[in-house]
Image (tube, rainbow, N blue to C red; front, side, top):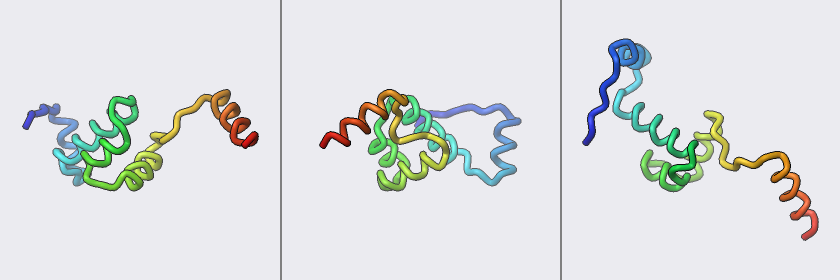
Length: 84
């Protein structure tokens, strides 16, 4: 197990909000790795001990999209689906 050192102010904020430090740190790291595309939604779900569906919904509620498409990519996909 690795140790992460937090400054006193951040540790106090987590403590005041009743956020378990270990769990919160792990969750934030996993969410950021997923947001950056470093890990898949399946891997993130596994690391957080939840189903992939639950993870995708949770990440979406936090503003981390499951699909990241530009408007042009979305329009091209929409057009392609309309041709089927």
